[in-house]
Image 1 (spheres, rainbow, N blue to C red):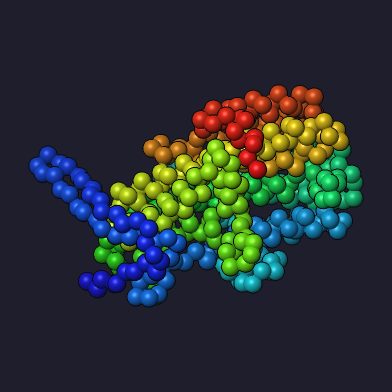
Image 2: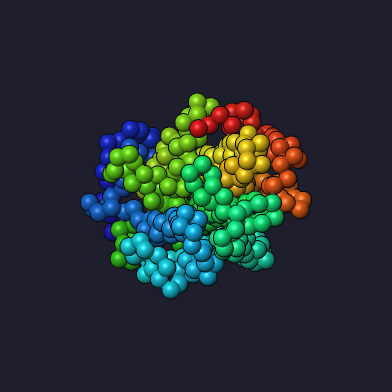
Length: 410
Protein backbone atom coordinates (compact mmCIF):
# COMPACT_ATOMS: atom_id res chain seq x y z
CA UNK A 1 0.00 0.00 0.00
CA UNK A 2 1.32 3.44 -0.93
CA UNK A 3 0.83 5.69 2.09
CA UNK A 4 1.07 9.36 1.21
CA UNK A 5 2.90 11.91 3.32
CA UNK A 6 0.51 14.15 5.24
CA UNK A 7 1.26 17.68 6.40
CA UNK A 8 -0.67 20.65 7.76
CA UNK A 9 0.62 23.94 6.37
CA UNK A 10 -0.13 26.05 9.41
CA UNK A 11 1.25 26.47 12.88
CA UNK A 12 -0.44 23.93 15.14
CA UNK A 13 -2.40 25.23 18.09
CA UNK A 14 -3.43 21.89 19.48
CA UNK A 15 -1.83 18.50 19.69
CA UNK A 16 -4.26 15.65 20.24
CA UNK A 17 -3.06 12.60 22.07
CA UNK A 18 -6.26 10.64 22.34
CA UNK A 19 -7.36 7.09 22.87
CA UNK A 20 -10.49 5.50 21.49
CA UNK A 21 -11.73 2.22 22.85
CA UNK A 22 -14.04 -0.50 21.67
CA UNK A 23 -15.08 -3.47 23.78
CA UNK A 24 -16.49 -6.87 22.99
CA UNK A 25 -17.07 -10.01 25.06
CA UNK A 26 -13.49 -11.19 24.73
CA UNK A 27 -11.15 -8.22 24.84
CA UNK A 28 -10.73 -4.46 24.93
CA UNK A 29 -8.68 -2.69 22.33
CA UNK A 30 -7.24 0.81 22.46
CA UNK A 31 -5.71 2.91 19.71
CA UNK A 32 -3.74 6.11 20.39
CA UNK A 33 -3.59 9.14 18.12
CA UNK A 34 -1.10 11.98 18.03
CA UNK A 35 -1.66 14.75 15.51
CA UNK A 36 -1.93 18.50 15.19
CA UNK A 37 -4.87 20.75 14.44
CA UNK A 38 -3.84 23.65 12.18
CA UNK A 39 -4.76 27.25 12.93
CA UNK A 40 -6.36 27.67 9.51
CA UNK A 41 -8.30 25.29 7.30
CA UNK A 42 -5.15 24.29 5.39
CA UNK A 43 -4.34 20.66 4.66
CA UNK A 44 -1.73 19.28 2.26
CA UNK A 45 -0.35 15.97 1.07
CA UNK A 46 3.06 15.97 -0.61
CA UNK A 47 2.96 19.79 -0.71
CA UNK A 48 -0.33 19.76 -2.63
CA UNK A 49 -3.55 21.02 -1.09
CA UNK A 50 -6.11 18.34 -0.31
CA UNK A 51 -8.95 20.85 0.19
CA UNK A 52 -11.52 21.32 -2.58
CA UNK A 53 -15.01 22.80 -2.27
CA UNK A 54 -15.34 24.51 -5.64
CA UNK A 55 -18.83 23.14 -6.25
CA UNK A 56 -20.07 24.62 -2.99
CA UNK A 57 -18.48 27.98 -3.79
CA UNK A 58 -20.30 27.98 -7.12
CA UNK A 59 -23.69 27.42 -5.50
CA UNK A 60 -23.09 30.12 -2.90
CA UNK A 61 -22.26 32.58 -5.67
CA UNK A 62 -25.29 31.48 -7.68
CA UNK A 63 -27.62 32.25 -4.78
CA UNK A 64 -25.86 35.58 -4.34
CA UNK A 65 -26.56 36.49 -7.97
CA UNK A 66 -30.17 35.40 -7.69
CA UNK A 67 -30.60 37.70 -4.71
CA UNK A 68 -29.09 40.59 -6.63
CA UNK A 69 -31.49 39.96 -9.53
CA UNK A 70 -34.42 40.72 -7.19
CA UNK A 71 -32.73 43.87 -5.88
CA UNK A 72 -31.88 45.17 -9.34
CA UNK A 73 -35.46 44.74 -10.53
CA UNK A 74 -36.81 46.62 -7.52
CA UNK A 75 -34.26 49.43 -7.76
CA UNK A 76 -34.43 49.92 -11.54
CA UNK A 77 -38.14 49.35 -11.97
CA UNK A 78 -37.57 46.38 -14.28
CA UNK A 79 -39.46 43.11 -14.31
CA UNK A 80 -38.14 40.30 -12.13
CA UNK A 81 -38.82 37.68 -14.78
CA UNK A 82 -39.90 34.43 -13.17
CA UNK A 83 -38.62 32.52 -16.22
CA UNK A 84 -35.14 33.97 -15.78
CA UNK A 85 -35.12 33.15 -12.08
CA UNK A 86 -36.25 29.58 -12.82
CA UNK A 87 -33.40 29.24 -15.30
CA UNK A 88 -30.94 30.55 -12.73
CA UNK A 89 -32.25 28.03 -10.19
CA UNK A 90 -31.70 25.23 -12.73
CA UNK A 91 -28.57 26.84 -14.25
CA UNK A 92 -29.73 26.83 -17.86
CA UNK A 93 -29.46 29.41 -20.68
CA UNK A 94 -26.32 31.09 -19.29
CA UNK A 95 -28.05 33.43 -16.84
CA UNK A 96 -25.07 33.99 -14.52
CA UNK A 97 -22.37 36.63 -14.89
CA UNK A 98 -19.84 35.16 -12.45
CA UNK A 99 -16.81 33.50 -14.00
CA UNK A 100 -17.39 29.82 -14.69
CA UNK A 101 -20.84 29.56 -13.10
CA UNK A 102 -22.76 28.85 -16.30
CA UNK A 103 -20.37 26.06 -17.29
CA UNK A 104 -19.76 24.69 -13.78
CA UNK A 105 -22.20 21.83 -14.16
CA UNK A 106 -23.64 22.86 -10.79
CA UNK A 107 -27.12 24.06 -9.90
CA UNK A 108 -29.13 24.94 -6.81
CA UNK A 109 -32.34 23.09 -7.57
CA UNK A 110 -30.99 19.54 -7.51
CA UNK A 111 -29.34 20.18 -4.13
CA UNK A 112 -32.48 21.61 -2.53
CA UNK A 113 -33.94 19.18 0.03
CA UNK A 114 -31.77 16.33 -1.26
CA UNK A 115 -29.75 15.14 1.73
CA UNK A 116 -28.93 11.51 2.39
CA UNK A 117 -30.38 11.50 5.92
CA UNK A 118 -33.66 13.37 5.32
CA UNK A 119 -34.50 12.88 1.65
CA UNK A 120 -32.91 9.60 0.57
CA UNK A 121 -35.72 7.11 0.17
CA UNK A 122 -33.59 4.02 0.62
CA UNK A 123 -32.66 5.33 4.07
CA UNK A 124 -36.29 5.99 4.93
CA UNK A 125 -35.82 9.75 4.74
CA UNK A 126 -38.18 12.46 3.52
CA UNK A 127 -40.60 11.78 0.74
CA UNK A 128 -40.36 12.84 -2.88
CA UNK A 129 -43.57 14.81 -2.29
CA UNK A 130 -41.90 16.96 0.36
CA UNK A 131 -38.86 17.52 -1.84
CA UNK A 132 -41.10 18.68 -4.68
CA UNK A 133 -43.11 20.97 -2.38
CA UNK A 134 -39.95 22.62 -1.02
CA UNK A 135 -38.64 23.35 -4.49
CA UNK A 136 -42.09 24.62 -5.48
CA UNK A 137 -42.00 27.00 -2.50
CA UNK A 138 -38.90 28.68 -3.88
CA UNK A 139 -40.19 28.75 -7.43
CA UNK A 140 -43.33 30.43 -6.09
CA UNK A 141 -41.06 33.24 -4.87
CA UNK A 142 -40.05 33.78 -8.51
CA UNK A 143 -43.72 34.18 -9.45
CA UNK A 144 -44.29 36.52 -6.50
CA UNK A 145 -41.32 38.67 -7.46
CA UNK A 146 -42.53 38.88 -11.06
CA UNK A 147 -45.97 39.99 -9.90
CA UNK A 148 -44.49 42.53 -7.46
CA UNK A 149 -42.32 44.10 -10.18
CA UNK A 150 -45.18 45.10 -12.46
CA UNK A 151 -45.25 48.72 -11.32
CA UNK A 152 -47.71 48.73 -8.42
CA UNK A 153 -47.12 49.95 -4.88
CA UNK A 154 -47.28 47.21 -2.26
CA UNK A 155 -50.39 47.39 -0.09
CA UNK A 156 -52.51 44.86 1.78
CA UNK A 157 -53.42 42.15 -0.69
CA UNK A 158 -51.48 43.77 -3.54
CA UNK A 159 -48.02 42.69 -4.67
CA UNK A 160 -45.71 45.56 -5.44
CA UNK A 161 -42.78 47.77 -4.45
CA UNK A 162 -42.29 50.00 -1.45
CA UNK A 163 -39.46 52.19 -0.24
CA UNK A 164 -37.74 50.90 2.89
CA UNK A 165 -35.61 53.87 3.84
CA UNK A 166 -33.55 54.35 0.68
CA UNK A 167 -34.08 50.80 -0.61
CA UNK A 168 -36.87 49.69 -2.90
CA UNK A 169 -38.02 46.15 -2.24
CA UNK A 170 -40.45 43.72 -3.88
CA UNK A 171 -43.27 42.32 -1.74
CA UNK A 172 -45.89 39.65 -2.36
CA UNK A 173 -49.55 40.28 -1.71
CA UNK A 174 -49.27 38.76 1.79
CA UNK A 175 -46.39 41.09 2.75
CA UNK A 176 -43.56 38.58 2.43
CA UNK A 177 -40.45 39.65 0.53
CA UNK A 178 -39.69 36.92 -2.06
CA UNK A 179 -35.98 37.74 -2.15
CA UNK A 180 -35.52 37.13 1.57
CA UNK A 181 -37.68 33.99 1.63
CA UNK A 182 -35.45 32.62 -1.12
CA UNK A 183 -32.11 33.68 0.37
CA UNK A 184 -32.69 32.60 3.96
CA UNK A 185 -34.86 29.65 3.06
CA UNK A 186 -32.25 28.29 0.65
CA UNK A 187 -29.58 28.69 3.30
CA UNK A 188 -31.62 26.09 5.14
CA UNK A 189 -33.19 23.86 2.50
CA UNK A 190 -30.01 23.67 0.43
CA UNK A 191 -26.91 24.69 2.41
CA UNK A 192 -27.93 23.58 5.93
CA UNK A 193 -29.45 20.37 4.59
CA UNK A 194 -26.30 19.54 2.68
CA UNK A 195 -24.02 20.36 5.63
CA UNK A 196 -25.86 18.69 8.50
CA UNK A 197 -27.80 15.94 6.79
CA UNK A 198 -25.62 15.00 3.86
CA UNK A 199 -21.89 15.72 4.01
CA UNK A 200 -21.64 15.42 7.80
CA UNK A 201 -23.93 12.40 7.83
CA UNK A 202 -22.27 9.17 8.92
CA UNK A 203 -24.33 7.53 6.18
CA UNK A 204 -22.41 9.69 3.71
CA UNK A 205 -18.98 9.85 5.34
CA UNK A 206 -18.75 6.11 5.97
CA UNK A 207 -20.72 4.76 3.02
CA UNK A 208 -19.43 1.86 0.96
CA UNK A 209 -15.62 1.78 1.03
CA UNK A 210 -15.12 5.38 2.16
CA UNK A 211 -13.88 4.56 5.66
CA UNK A 212 -11.64 1.73 4.47
CA UNK A 213 -10.18 3.89 1.70
CA UNK A 214 -9.60 6.78 4.07
CA UNK A 215 -7.91 4.57 6.65
CA UNK A 216 -5.60 3.17 3.96
CA UNK A 217 -5.20 6.63 2.38
CA UNK A 218 -6.43 5.50 -1.02
CA UNK A 219 -6.94 8.72 -2.96
CA UNK A 220 -9.69 9.62 -5.38
CA UNK A 221 -8.40 9.00 -8.90
CA UNK A 222 -6.45 12.01 -10.14
CA UNK A 223 -6.94 13.91 -6.87
CA UNK A 224 -4.87 14.63 -3.79
CA UNK A 225 -7.58 13.68 -1.27
CA UNK A 226 -9.56 10.71 -0.05
CA UNK A 227 -13.33 10.59 -0.52
CA UNK A 228 -13.93 11.19 3.18
CA UNK A 229 -11.60 14.20 3.28
CA UNK A 230 -13.39 15.71 0.29
CA UNK A 231 -16.83 15.03 1.76
CA UNK A 232 -15.87 16.92 4.91
CA UNK A 233 -14.49 19.80 2.83
CA UNK A 234 -17.78 20.05 0.95
CA UNK A 235 -19.61 20.64 4.24
CA UNK A 236 -17.06 23.31 5.13
CA UNK A 237 -17.49 24.93 1.72
CA UNK A 238 -21.21 25.50 2.19
CA UNK A 239 -20.34 27.89 5.04
CA UNK A 240 -17.08 29.50 4.00
CA UNK A 241 -16.87 28.86 0.26
CA UNK A 242 -17.59 32.40 -0.94
CA UNK A 243 -15.80 34.35 1.80
CA UNK A 244 -12.95 36.63 0.75
CA UNK A 245 -10.42 37.21 3.52
CA UNK A 246 -7.88 38.77 1.17
CA UNK A 247 -9.70 42.10 0.97
CA UNK A 248 -10.31 44.73 3.63
CA UNK A 249 -12.85 44.66 5.06
CA UNK A 250 -13.24 40.90 4.75
CA UNK A 251 -16.24 39.67 2.74
CA UNK A 252 -18.53 37.10 4.32
CA UNK A 253 -21.59 35.53 2.69
CA UNK A 254 -24.64 33.55 3.75
CA UNK A 255 -24.05 31.35 6.83
CA UNK A 256 -20.63 32.85 7.45
CA UNK A 257 -22.22 36.31 7.72
CA UNK A 258 -24.75 35.24 10.30
CA UNK A 259 -22.29 33.22 12.34
CA UNK A 260 -20.32 36.45 12.70
CA UNK A 261 -23.41 38.46 13.61
CA UNK A 262 -24.51 36.02 16.30
CA UNK A 263 -20.95 35.80 17.59
CA UNK A 264 -20.90 39.60 18.03
CA UNK A 265 -23.33 39.28 20.95
CA UNK A 266 -21.78 38.53 24.33
CA UNK A 267 -24.38 35.82 24.98
CA UNK A 268 -23.17 33.81 21.97
CA UNK A 269 -19.59 34.99 21.47
CA UNK A 270 -17.92 31.57 21.28
CA UNK A 271 -20.02 30.26 18.42
CA UNK A 272 -17.71 31.37 15.62
CA UNK A 273 -14.59 29.89 17.20
CA UNK A 274 -16.44 26.71 18.14
CA UNK A 275 -17.61 26.05 14.58
CA UNK A 276 -14.27 26.89 12.99
CA UNK A 277 -12.34 24.73 15.47
CA UNK A 278 -14.73 21.82 15.01
CA UNK A 279 -14.24 21.90 11.25
CA UNK A 280 -10.44 22.01 11.55
CA UNK A 281 -10.30 19.43 14.32
CA UNK A 282 -12.64 17.07 12.51
CA UNK A 283 -10.66 17.35 9.28
CA UNK A 284 -7.39 16.68 11.10
CA UNK A 285 -9.01 13.70 12.79
CA UNK A 286 -10.07 12.30 9.42
CA UNK A 287 -6.48 12.46 8.16
CA UNK A 288 -5.37 10.64 11.31
CA UNK A 289 -8.23 8.09 11.11
CA UNK A 290 -9.51 9.23 14.51
CA UNK A 291 -13.20 8.72 13.87
CA UNK A 292 -14.36 9.17 17.46
CA UNK A 293 -13.01 12.73 17.50
CA UNK A 294 -14.41 13.35 14.01
CA UNK A 295 -17.88 12.33 15.16
CA UNK A 296 -17.69 14.59 18.21
CA UNK A 297 -16.95 17.56 15.93
CA UNK A 298 -19.95 16.71 13.77
CA UNK A 299 -22.18 17.07 16.81
CA UNK A 300 -20.65 20.45 17.64
CA UNK A 301 -21.11 21.81 14.12
CA UNK A 302 -24.70 20.62 13.86
CA UNK A 303 -25.66 22.09 17.25
CA UNK A 304 -23.91 25.42 16.76
CA UNK A 305 -25.17 25.99 13.22
CA UNK A 306 -28.71 25.22 14.33
CA UNK A 307 -28.27 27.77 17.12
CA UNK A 308 -27.32 30.44 14.58
CA UNK A 309 -30.53 29.79 12.65
CA UNK A 310 -32.63 29.91 15.81
CA UNK A 311 -31.07 33.12 17.14
CA UNK A 312 -31.41 34.93 13.82
CA UNK A 313 -35.02 33.80 13.43
CA UNK A 314 -35.95 35.25 16.82
CA UNK A 315 -33.90 38.39 16.21
CA UNK A 316 -35.70 39.20 12.97
CA UNK A 317 -39.14 38.38 14.37
CA UNK A 318 -38.55 40.80 17.21
CA UNK A 319 -37.01 43.46 14.98
CA UNK A 320 -40.04 43.23 12.73
CA UNK A 321 -42.40 43.40 15.68
CA UNK A 322 -40.73 46.62 16.81
CA UNK A 323 -41.42 48.22 13.43
CA UNK A 324 -45.05 47.19 13.05
CA UNK A 325 -46.30 50.68 13.86
CA UNK A 326 -44.10 52.28 11.18
CA UNK A 327 -45.78 53.00 7.83
CA UNK A 328 -48.68 50.68 8.66
CA UNK A 329 -46.21 47.86 9.19
CA UNK A 330 -44.49 48.12 5.82
CA UNK A 331 -41.02 48.76 7.27
CA UNK A 332 -41.38 45.61 9.37
CA UNK A 333 -41.87 43.24 6.48
CA UNK A 334 -38.24 43.03 5.35
CA UNK A 335 -37.13 41.82 8.79
CA UNK A 336 -40.13 39.51 9.16
CA UNK A 337 -39.36 37.94 5.78
CA UNK A 338 -35.81 37.23 6.93
CA UNK A 339 -37.20 35.66 10.09
CA UNK A 340 -39.59 33.59 7.97
CA UNK A 341 -36.64 32.29 5.95
CA UNK A 342 -34.66 31.35 9.04
CA UNK A 343 -37.68 29.49 10.41
CA UNK A 344 -37.68 27.48 7.17
CA UNK A 345 -34.05 26.64 7.92
CA UNK A 346 -35.00 25.10 11.28
CA UNK A 347 -36.58 22.20 9.40
CA UNK A 348 -33.10 21.25 8.11
CA UNK A 349 -31.22 21.33 11.41
CA UNK A 350 -30.06 18.04 12.89
CA UNK A 351 -30.09 17.57 16.64
CA UNK A 352 -27.05 15.50 17.71
CA UNK A 353 -27.92 12.05 18.93
CA UNK A 354 -31.33 12.00 17.24
CA UNK A 355 -30.77 12.37 13.49
CA UNK A 356 -33.89 14.53 13.54
CA UNK A 357 -34.42 18.30 13.25
CA UNK A 358 -34.88 20.48 16.32
CA UNK A 359 -38.30 21.31 14.89
CA UNK A 360 -40.25 18.91 12.70
CA UNK A 361 -41.68 19.88 9.34
CA UNK A 362 -45.13 20.00 10.93
CA UNK A 363 -43.93 22.39 13.64
CA UNK A 364 -42.09 24.62 11.17
CA UNK A 365 -45.07 24.73 8.81
CA UNK A 366 -47.31 25.72 11.72
CA UNK A 367 -45.03 28.63 12.63
CA UNK A 368 -44.87 29.82 9.04
CA UNK A 369 -48.63 29.54 8.60
CA UNK A 370 -49.23 31.47 11.79
CA UNK A 371 -47.19 34.40 10.51
CA UNK A 372 -49.18 34.85 7.30
CA UNK A 373 -52.58 33.53 8.38
CA UNK A 374 -55.66 35.55 7.56
CA UNK A 375 -56.72 37.41 4.44
CA UNK A 376 -53.85 39.90 4.33
CA UNK A 377 -50.99 37.95 5.90
CA UNK A 378 -48.37 40.22 7.46
CA UNK A 379 -50.51 43.28 6.78
CA UNK A 380 -52.80 42.22 9.65
CA UNK A 381 -50.55 44.11 12.05
CA UNK A 382 -53.10 44.37 14.88
CA UNK A 383 -52.83 40.64 15.63
CA UNK A 384 -49.35 39.95 14.29
CA UNK A 385 -47.34 41.03 17.34
CA UNK A 386 -48.77 38.32 19.59
CA UNK A 387 -48.04 35.67 16.96
CA UNK A 388 -44.44 36.83 16.64
CA UNK A 389 -43.96 36.67 20.41
CA UNK A 390 -45.40 33.16 20.57
CA UNK A 391 -43.14 31.87 17.79
CA UNK A 392 -40.10 33.62 19.27
CA UNK A 393 -40.73 32.04 22.65
CA UNK A 394 -41.23 28.60 21.08
CA UNK A 395 -37.88 28.77 19.31
CA UNK A 396 -35.95 30.31 22.20
CA UNK A 397 -37.26 27.71 24.65
CA UNK A 398 -36.22 24.83 22.40
CA UNK A 399 -32.66 26.20 22.21
CA UNK A 400 -32.39 27.29 25.86
CA UNK A 401 -31.88 31.01 25.33
CA UNK A 402 -34.23 33.92 26.01
CA UNK A 403 -36.05 36.08 23.51
CA UNK A 404 -34.30 39.11 24.99
CA UNK A 405 -30.87 37.52 24.44
CA UNK A 406 -31.60 36.90 20.76
CA UNK A 407 -33.29 40.23 20.17
CA UNK A 408 -30.17 42.16 21.23
CA UNK A 409 -27.84 40.50 18.71
CA UNK A 410 -26.55 43.11 16.23
